[in-house]
Length: 579
Picture 1: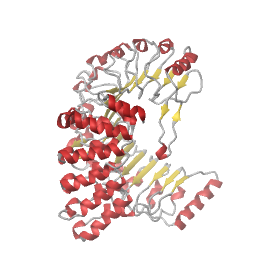
Picture 2: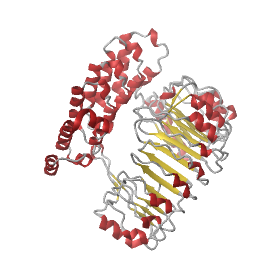
Picture 3: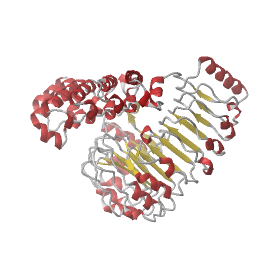
Picture 4: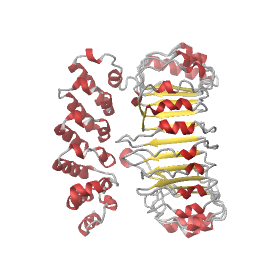
């Protein structure tokens, strides 16, 4: 829920954003000292305030009673706070229209919320073990429902009875199983305009039944927008072709079977199209855009295609063009046909020159050519041209940094005939690419390196740079001993607490997994580190004694992690208090 800055007595903006001194990021917002300070700030504006933002306000451990006297309050955000209850008086506020309560400490779905009959927007965290009650349909005025799912429970079958719902967002935050299916009750829904399915963390890719969902959505005449990220849809993307009324389609990092552009070719009402992520494995963008005359924004990135399809240059309404992280080495002069073009993002390619007349585009406001191979003299010439236009009243933002950056990665991804390449030469290029960017490990052809020690050496080099590359490493290709060595290296990373769940204990012996746990406990700086071991599966396999030993080590290194420990012993509590 986006809220404006505190400017008058209508708005009380007490949001707080934690800083990160290691990264040089300063905190943002107001950090209240205690609950009493928050109450006093609310009391000053209680008669007029319409918007209160307390997002991530650590001092908010309960909702103060003074908030119940804010009769004009329309929007309330208490997300990312430590509240354990939302009192009934919040839901009795007659003007309340929007509530954001993404709160990890709430023990159960706040059923009193169902009394807030005038609520139009609800952003809520569904904690583990929760399920969305069928009675949610009593919120007849609800237009926006955004669910952060830490529970894999199914959506209520009658959810489509929310007849006024315009925007449904499902943000998947759990590791296993599947994404909840779209209920059949959405068939012929007259108000639904936007669907957003997002899996932010996909160690284990979760499947989403897009095949059936698209069939349901094809009966929703108001539907204009479909945004999806991080899920496995298999061949289900083929039914996107049924959504003829779409104006916005954004697909990021999906696992698919077949060619995604074949499913999009007939969507001639699109105004915004974004296809982003190397997971699509696209080798060529087909020339399908001639009938997409309404298209105003096109973004494509992450796939090493050799050229921009010619029909792109016929899109007279195009305002934003992005073609990034590809293998294109030239941009056709036809781009100057796009007289409405305002923003050009052609970053992270293999470009050395631009079309001579690119600055004849009358509405050009932004040019991003970062991470290509333009020479310093060529960049200087462009800057001189832009300065000249600025003197005539035309301002163009210009981004040009990191020329020549990540060339090894690009060369690795652009290889077309890998079978003819010498093994040692290929391994050397892979290692250079990983040293440029550790995530390049996902572009390696593992079959090419089979039977050699090269893959293990490359994965070790990647893990030395960041533990998050564990997501892109294939344990079976490493073998158990090499996988152990790579995980031990990754466990030395300070961010290991955020990525520890990427480590596959099923591919490690009992003792080696414990060694990795102990190394991670010594390196970790994440407050949630101990949460990785609070699962039933860990407790059953390793037991309380090992759990306490890991916690003891973690607390000794970082005392604040004790807040996530299950039933901390007095000894560990004493260690934490002395640090």
